[in-house]
Length: 158
Image (cartoon, rainbow, N blue to C red; front, side, top):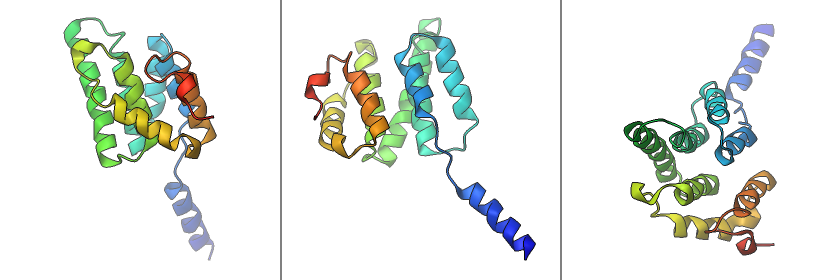
């Protein structure tokens, strides 16, 4: 009986998803420090593989590209991150947080990279679903909107 209890408890621990501290990710994305990005990426590497981890990692890699030296290395890091993020959006196009991450990346990305195609559709989805989002994600979006030219705070639903 004790063995069954141990097996059950262990299986519950293994199957219980760990909630990633998104504050670390968003702090790194909004900051101007390679150290913040590196720390956030290191924390994500310790997490179990999931769509959320891959989307966060993708967004962070695009941010990391702004700190990397050399044009070729910058482009490589950016494309790697953008590809990861796009794969997760393709797999779950209704995930508003992934759409928000992509919008933030696309707004900040240099035009020469040609990564600005989805801003209108992402903004529309975010605004249409804003009131249904978690309080923490709404807070992150509101923080972003304070400095966004594309999706300013004045456009967010009250």
